[in-house]
Length: 67
Image (cartoon, rainbow, N blue to C red; front, side, top):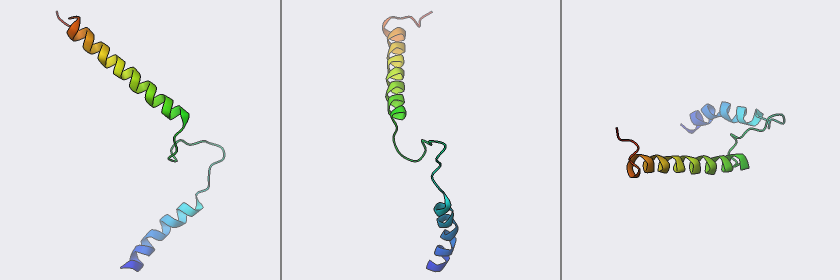
């Protein structure tokens, strides 16, 4: 059973060993946080929260949604 598992995992180990770091492109998908991702996350969530609160305020408290 263990031999079959090691044989099945052999191609994955070989392909992972062959994968070299790409020197030409800076990928953001390797697991590390970048300043662009952090600023983008907080900027987008802050904007969307303000938009949702503004929509709530306009539709409920200011009665702009009534016909």
